[in-house]
Length: 181
Image 1 (cartoon, rainbow, N blue to C red):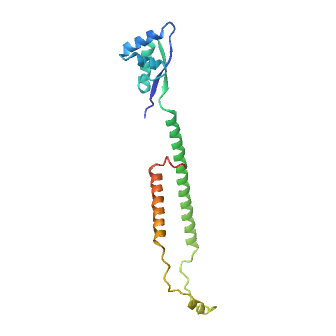
Image 2: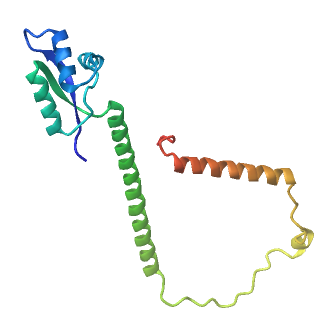
Image 3: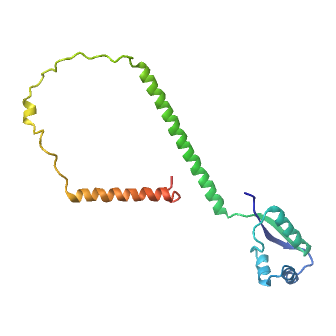
């Protein structure tokens, strides 16, 4: 992407009246005098262009006794948005790098643990379970009773909360500029 520049009014040469410069410029460029007056009030006269074309526009203005200067085109808000987006991208890449390195360390740790394990699994000999307590406690418990059913309002409430959270997630993914990191 090439840089764009805008021609901005600086001053008039000595001995040139503003009214004469306005009429000469409006006749030369075949534009209304109100546009030229707006140019003298620091409004843009030409659309943003590359550096070479903007230099030609300045040269044209200088032949008529009007001093102008180049100004880089771009609003300060767009440059701040680009810097904040760049910072956001840097944080995102840093987080992804951290996650990747953590996964690699976990994988290495698992390999170390696998190497420590014996190659042949040890066969357990059948041991009789200790009868430290009798079966009387288990008989007292009702293990076959069905789980209590939840009411329909609780189920609907959980469903609504789930849908709401999914909607928030979809908004965060669709419009990341709304969510601040």
